[in-house]
Image: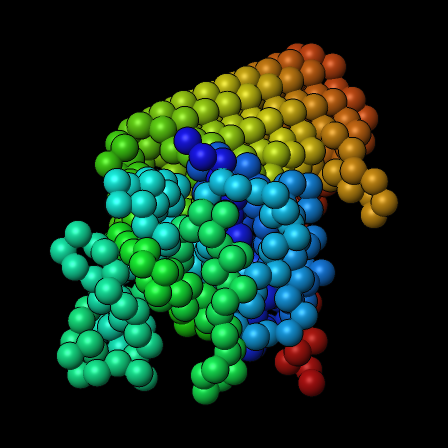
Length: 449
């Protein structure tokens, strides 16, 4: 096994995105495209990673900070060959295998990268390995002309291809694997005698051929090498990713009532026998255990849901929500940085933020924990088996003891001991016959006008 390095090209302007955000930082499934790719490179075990930056370099550098990624700068956009050459210093004295990848082609998998490297060390020792694909419409892609064993005869740009070459369906993705000892020596020989005046990376294949060395192509599916250059292409690739993730979820034992309406994040974890109803959205950081039911139109992000719990419909679990075994979060209930204990219930129209709710507690409809005074956040503690009446406001910091009952409509500003009854509302006053007398008086006034 040779050491592996990856050069990721991310210097382009991405003008078709029409965005102030660098193209490679637009997300797929809640994670920037570039980080999808770098995570796959890390999973492969790459010793070095170099990102070639250019336009809006500060955004890219901030996104990869702390990941041990080297940076190379392409000040002038002079083609893909020129871009790869900028990584020379960052890969100084590296003699292993080099993968050349693109930051806007985010979904190439570690297994595919490994297959490229394995082919690089095949019996015929190709100088380069090109990753090819066969799109439904080859269009203006460059063509790869190869024999049945995948040995490349030539690679041609569409505009330079003959009719016979254009009839070939094997296309060049641009992704390559090259030995480090060969890469920069070949790049030094690439010229820019072409209409664009640019240095093209694929030219190294034909330069190696001129030295009597063959190159090879291996194939992968279209999705893995789909690039993103516009918002429309971003949406299309997101849809493909989501479709594949839904299929995997169902294969792993999750019931999706309307699969096309469920939206996953890149790191969503779902256990077996989870049921997800239509129009559920999973943001980053969600972990759902076995046997959970998530009703329709619920929104989950940065939360954990334990076995047997029931969520929604129309529930919102924000970061830090921790829903324990067999607990129930009902319709139009929002939790944030809150623990809902085993078997506890918050069934209707409540906000539970910065709170600890004990096992078996019942949170009545319309209850809120008043956790913010405009400057600081404070916690509310509700004991096991406590009962909070409807339309109550718990002004934090405040504690309700185990088994305590809070009367409906109460506003609590001080602690309640265990098994106590707390009533914090104005005394009810009833005046017999007042309403009838009021109506008669008002009708008389209206008639006199």
